[in-house]
Length: 270
Image (cartoon, rainbow, N blue to C red; front, side, top):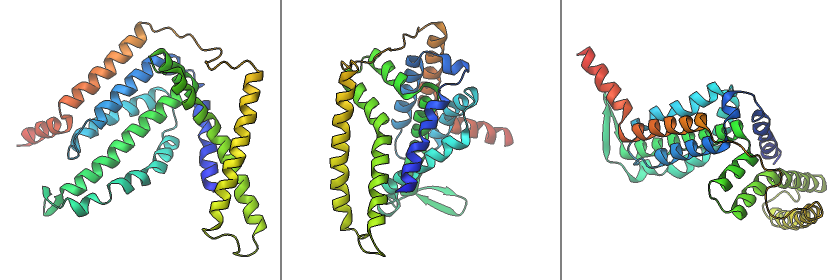
């Protein structure tokens, strides 16, 4: 519980990184959101066996991380937290899809292993792109940009509240877990049966906390809209940014850059 709580609190560093002064930070959030959406759509549209075609897409997050002066190690650590979920989704593929798809010298690789690697790579690409977008923009400006792009305000507010009060939920869960440990002597009360009462207690605490927060927001003039929304300008720089990365992602989606490069190299060597 403590490790999860610490990992959630560490996500606040993304909001601090969004206060940078690079040219990417100063771009209108809508431009970065649109470019990232095109990137994610192109990545997830690949088939389960198109592994090599995904490799060139690492250009997008790598360039944004370098230009935005973001800590690559920190973002890689956050992606590593999500990696077990991708592994759990695709770990059964090698057992059900045993048809040989390619040969690496004497090694025969089945289609299950290729699709498993494809799931992991696509997860790494999309999560890295989402984290990079948040580190360059901030979560609240992203929600405002989504509203200005046509997303319903109610859904955008729900996303913002989910992100903002996820840390409050983690804090409440940490307190409940520590209280349970202090009240249990030895191993008594630490079994799986005790988690039912812990979850019920956590539900009641968060419900009461949410009611107090809602009343405080109403007292401060909350009307269901973004207050003091930033009015960014979508100019020529933003248009060039969106067009460049969208065109590059579409080209990489239509043409397998890794295969083209491999054919050129093998043709040159032969």
